[in-house]
Image 1 (spheres, helix red, strand yellow):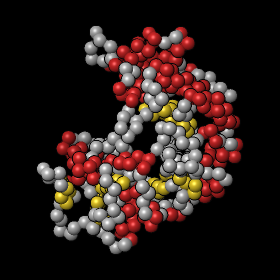
Image 2: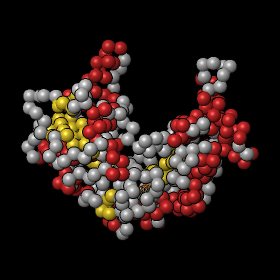
Image 3: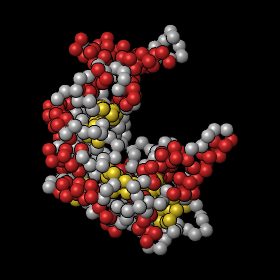
Length: 410
Ligand code: SF4
């Protein structure tokens, strides 16, 4: 029996994305005739005694291997797992720990035979069925209506998608990015390695698909030829866009918003040039940009840079999605005196229905109205007032820019 632990599933309450490595490991072992079990609690597999020794929980049929995988660095795991992850495990040790959540850019790849195995897309089925039952029972007990279709939406990444990497790596080496070990983008998996005909959609996890030399076109055409909706979960590199790419992407069955990245203000001109190019193709879909904040030096200047980028995106009717930088060890913006401003800007931008209707000032005023105490200011209003008091006239105008009032720039 093979035990598989998706640590993010256990440690993050609202986590809703399958761990591809876990699915590949499960697929590989099932093909070897092994029974595979998705572990629901660390207590099922081991505990640490008072002497610090890790003891495997005896079970009827001992686990031949226990795989623990984590994608996010801030997902909590038991101390014994943390400790064990500090030492390399040999390939014959029962417990195998891996993933960027433990080792960041030093994470080792899976063995080739597993990496290139068809994922077991049914690894999570049992867990999903349990969650559904729990929700049904809760609805019954509280007299609420249970709508299966609506409830199951949260699991769509588990149930509807084929997931994989057509390419891997990136040549840019952005200092905030995990992809430091790569020098270039290279072709990784053929589509049929992870494409399951029975699944409605395809989700690509490629780091920088458009940076894959001349291959991007052939690969994109293969995706389009499946007739399935597809999306690039990590976003696309807008700085690389060319007419031909726009033509194919904007006329494709793209799944959801088409997302790019606008990580640093230094790219302002380049991004604007490409925003103009995008407009030429009049995308029917919303175009969204990840806007990284809090990396260089959290503070007022960084916030002004974020506003400048948001303003440019607004001008071209694109939506920002604020990503607050978080490294393996820390999230510097959290320690900054501007933490409240980072949180408020993210709450404003990352809720498109609010962002499309309200300026940042209006958003803070709306928060103030909902604030319990009328004598004190809510955290958003406090943060905005502080920014306003230190900002120049030119910078203060960012507080009143509004998506709905922007004329589209062409
Ligand atoms: S372009 Fe994207 S994938 Fe490449 S290094 Fe920068 S952030 Fe990472």
